[in-house]
Structure formats: structure tokens, C-alpha cells
Length: 173
Picture 1 (cartoon, rainbow, N blue to C red):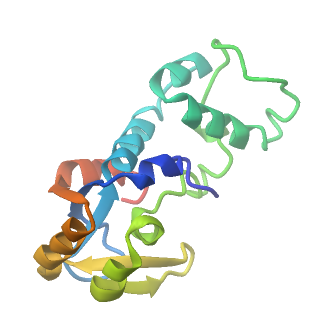
Picture 2: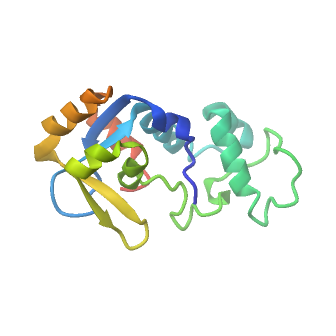
Picture 3: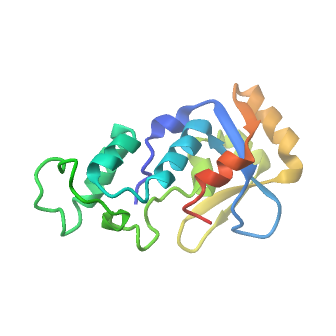
């Protein structure tokens, strides 16, 4: 599955950090572009909408388009031309891959390697491979000051926001 969040959110220099979901033992820190974190919170907050119109009013157009593209892959919607009318019933279960926990495929620990500069990963990251999600990067909490300084040197602004990071990772907890 593709990331339902556009890569535009990944190009930000405004970074939040907080506790990492526990893929392995240890105190780990997770870094996310603020835009990605906020988009994931938004996506998580619309899982109980009842119509396509409610979904469209709750999400940015690009996310709705991505969801519709995924939904058209299912038998239920394969013959529907164009976007469904606002009153069309919507259930998150209609999104191909949701029931299997393949969507949304936003495993922030793995996506760190997509946007964090390689020099920071090489110096401070602990890269590991998971059974189903591929490789991921972990950062030890004890190196936090050094990691933040490395980000700052490259023009990033890192702000601790454990609540936002935890809320953004609803798909993984």
C-alpha cells in the first residue's frame, strides 16, 4: 500500500518528536514532519464518518482522491464512474486493505528513512528490518540532544510534541 499522505508533508523542516511505538525494547524517539503528523491525526478522526460528503468535508482533497482511488479497486465500487455523490454511504471498511491493517500504510518509524537526511540516520539511527513492514529506523532517547543538534545544523526545527506524535500513530498502536 502507498502512503495516503502526500510527500509534500514530508518535505517540511518543521519536525515534531515524541515516543516511538514499541517495535523493540527500549526508549525510542520518533521524528515526524509536523504536516505528516497533523494529516495522520485528521485521517484518524474521520474513521467514523457515514457518507462520502462527510468524508470530503473532513479531509483535504488529495486525501479524498487517494481514498477514492483505493476504493475503486474494490468490487463494490469498480463500476462507479467519477466520484460518488455526497449522500453515498461511506464506511472505512470499504477501503481496500483497512480490515487487514494494510491501510493506511503510514508506519512513521519506517517513513523516517524517507525524509530524514542520511547523515543523521547513519550517525544516530538504529536501522532494523521487520517481518511485514520492511526496514525502519529507531533513534535512542539518550542521544536526543545530539540528534536535535544535527537536525538544527541542517536547517530543521525540532519541537517535542508527544501528544501529537502519539495521536498521529493511531494506526500502529
